[in-house]
Length: 360
Length: 276
Figure 1 (cartoon, chains in turn red, green):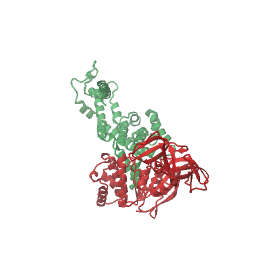
Figure 2 (cartoon, each protein chain N blue to C red):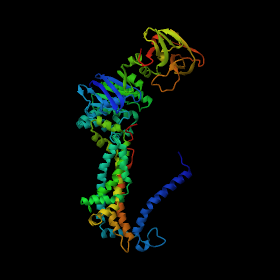
Figure 3 (cartoon, rainbow over the protein chains, first blue to last red):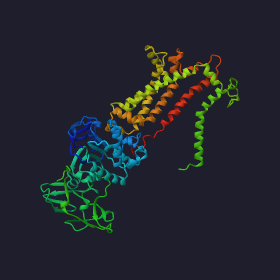
Figure 4 (spheres, chains in turn blue, cyan):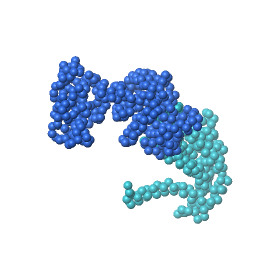
């Protein structure tokens, strides 16, 4: 096991910069998740870390050793791929033992370690089968087995759960988490799924357009997003945004004015963010009337969709607008066409610079 | 989905018609070999000889150096397959995996060589082989057949390599293989059906050649291939078609045997399970 140090690594293809200078210190045993929308550069960074793509600039250290120019096999890392990448012509036993065989491990030691890995991942009954005879979950376990059997310095995982169905994904997510706790190997995990990022990571690196947007623990990201992108990306349903105006500490939003103690010296247009769960049906310091366009019931809570002046759709949403969302605790039926009064505490509002998207 | 009677009828009719088109010449070859000379010219023709001349095979085998011709054909074909596969596997893999400046154009350009008829290349190849003193040698066939095989084989193999996920090589490299090691240990075993199909194509192309053999080897009877040897059985005044047909049966046997041997490798689907 080792720490990983990524220093000013960038990647460009001609004039196209896919990864701006990227620096990250990963502690020994830490579970770091790189998350972001498609094309944000997260998989490119992982491939550079694995040695499968050369970096245009920068250095990478694993432990005390610089590995920037080393081939993938010399970096002492293991990688789990999105599509498992199991060798179809080899049995499960040969798949798991392939890396050890390449390193000249003697037969007895190889068998012992393959058996250990198979036992940990509960694939012992399938050791003599070919990958095509396994289910998706079993293949994923074999891919994990191939990674852990070598006892590498670090695990790199490239969206390892995205080919699994929803139920199995939740199960394997927990298994990977448990596996990490058990063997404690430094892990860099790439995903586009914020739920995976939030539930698995010690720290999350949020990326967009090849640039790191924020590096923080999951709770910190949720509570203190650095900018509009992070605020919109983290949380489900996503944060509501609306255009508003801030003058001399007075914010005009939801058709009313309110005093704010924060960002008192900012003047002009701002983007206000409020999380759906911070909008309530009960009494609140600020209330406003809405006509719901849609009410979705999840039993004990409701998603109330509504439109209001200045509403905008968060970055990273799928573009299908249903307006703003309130996630309210309410078990009875809600009248759809009648006006509801929603409210919030101004202390729960997030303010962003309308021009740069930076948090105020 | 259940087929209607009409659909089934159309399907079986098509299959039977296609099979008949393919198998009739083979059947006719056998009938010709087994018929007496008189029977061959009888009208209307007989569809199975009244007295099959099974002894013709032993007679032709004894009268002509069939084994030598087959051996020469085999040497030329095996040499052509070996040389072509060596070049095509490397070239197809490079075209499939590495993005090179002008790679796609280069690939297409390679394919245009396939569009040239073999006869167009006979004269320049003759000139080149003459200057190296190779005329009369089986090496001329190995080299000439490779010029026909390599362009198309490269494209066949590139297409096959394209279907193999790159992640398999990446996984092998992370596991400690060099790029060539990943190709040899992971890609080539998975590509066995593609390699077998390409090798079979190359073998048949070389085995079936007549034009090159006739041009480069005609004055070296010891190096005659089967196709060239058989044409010398055509007489100036009389041609014994039954003898020629019997010799042709001997030539067809190795191809059928090789096809039966490679058939198990030709079945695809080996990559199933590599990824979801």
